[in-house]
Length: 331
Image (cartoon, rainbow, N blue to C red; front, side, top):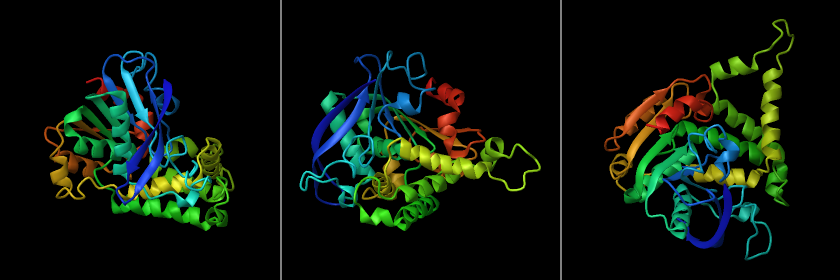
């Protein structure tokens, strides 16, 4: 897929304008076929072939050579779009903690700016998982006439108290690292970020998944340490991928803003505005977006289909259960 970048002025929901905001996105090399727009999750980027390679790529279920695939890097991310990792044009220094608070609706406004830049009038298939699903649901409400079909994976129309609690625990980990508040450069808060990532992973997986992959190989081991090594590895891996604590903090704050019902008469009324043919997918072991909740709000979308899949890997099932999800996408 090909990388692009545009610069726009974005009015922010919390007030003010983010002037000269860089928006990074990827598209298929050529314009052809259906328009498939993917909204990425928290620490992913705008190239889905990087983070969803079993699903997106030549010969895969979503084939950039067959369809016109688009993915925009969210505001506040480490991977190119305007964020704490970019230079504040007013000061010539990195934004870091001075970056303005952005919301899910602000990222959707950025997506719409890219849509208009590309001259896309209709999105044939909109896909969003996790907080990428936050963006997708919000967009389906904001521009109902633009979306033909939508697939909402392991997500919700409003952040729950449980998810809010997990996010706050991760912010506390960042804030507990004294180098985070010093905000000298992007290396600040590295230890806190590793801890935050380890905490997040526990909510992404479940009892069964850890039991399958991280059980001790030696039944007589004195001190169980395999899973501890795994948790530390995941934090290190995120840092090596170039994610920084300030962007992570910004993304956590943005997730707190998610509520499609704000100013629209509540969630149920807002979802009633959706015109797309929608499929809501839940994973039976997802701790963050439990099936009972997904089944309930799917009823508020006119004509929506609800599908529940089984997985031993909790919320991360949307990344790992490729065969099951492919069958849904191909319907």
